[in-house]
Image 1: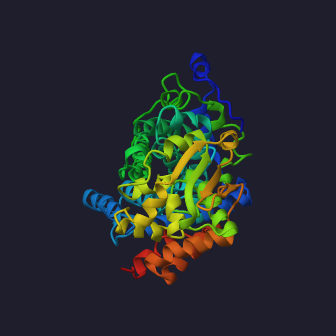
Image 2: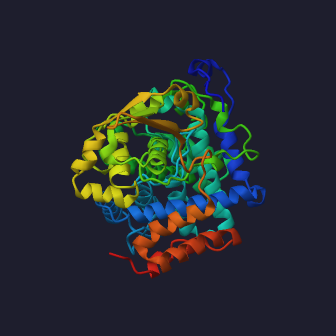
Image 3: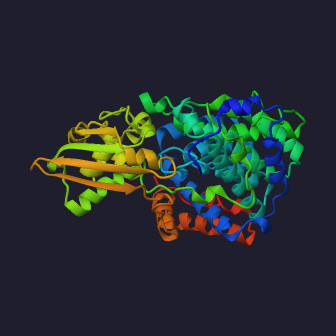
Length: 478
């Protein structure tokens, strides 16, 4: 994808813009399982597995529990599973709780060019509706593929301007359309109704990235609000309530509202012939994806140069301009889990002092109030700077350079791409192993394995309800 984006003024002066919203709705309503390539089907299942693992590992956290309790209090009984509860709720409320959990610990998927987190919205939205209507596997996989693709293509249309220029958070702004499109296809809405639902969904598109400047738990909720908003839009559209059918491309549509520069055609170019979500990254580390290449470069120094905490006099991290805004503001002393996961300084210090950036490492850091003297001491020696090579590579590639000045007077340096992205992808075995670690630690290996088998069985057209059914039968670990 070219780095240049169409200036927004060009789009605004068009008298008859391409009917992007209607094209997207038409494609979704007509897509059939048989038309989806095998590699797309396989990736859908792996991304679904990864997302459910992410939701399970976050489900015991206090801020996720508060959202779940809110959903349980407000919703009548339904048929959709709520992770962490034996009660089933209406789809909107189950999706709110599960999507918030799925985005709850910064271990869910992301796309480096679209700068999007598709799984935490697409999977909970589609599965909640699939359980409600007792959908089969193939139809559910079609809906999931559409949800993933819509979110990624929205990002390709508006990024990086939306976040760099305007400060909006992608997960709710983009996610609400993936929720509506994927679940709407599962409900077999006609193109006109589906386009109207997208028009309604836009009124739920929201959220800024101020959390990356001063902390707060709200980032997690953005996924839940997107999933809930998309399903609410569908419920209203099915009843005949209308939304603008030019909501994406219109003169007062969402593209111009959320970014200074955009390329509307990216939303629909090559639909069905090219699946852009295939390059979605799966995270090995439990922090913002922009930090991953930094961690990889530091880990290379640890493995290849034997770098230890006592060696460090200063650590200079060369990165791109977005990272200087998004993961450089919190600094060495975060105040909560979210700010720790959006601090290059603290996350890199954890990698060197604590030996990793898994969920367990961040929980341990939290138990110390994010004030472990050894971690903070290293974090205070770290500074970020703009690196021309990293800036030129971004956003197609997440690249970082870590240079360490050692106490013995020597300087060592490594440059790495982010593990889990197309530049350094995880294997299927590694993805499955990650899921088993996450899920097994919460619900036990037997239940985790049953969920994994049920996800794989969607390809054989097994009932979608089977995916989360083991959570009702399994024994939850304390």
